[in-house]
Length: 118
Image (cartoon, rainbow, N blue to C red; front, side):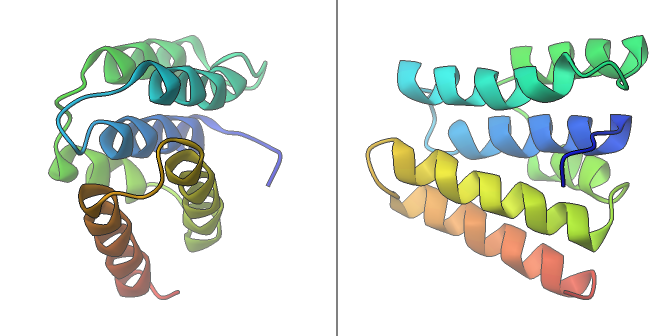
């Protein structure tokens, strides 16, 4: 999916930050990757100023909870969730391999997608 909308951009930012921070810290490499991913959505002309501000707040909050993330994910389609999932694979594989905390996040996200009707 190449067309971003506010909800997709916000959900992508939230899930990327949550995944990167799941082991208690965000490495410089992870931060760089997340900022690139979020930046693509954040600079898209179709994103509202309100969404840009929301994304800015999310990226500043490395302590975002699963419940907060899920609230954003609830606003996007299953197809968009699949796109987010593909991006997460790239994020975790590019940085030091997949650690147990990241596996747990990906499993939780997969369960969430399945509950939405994958």
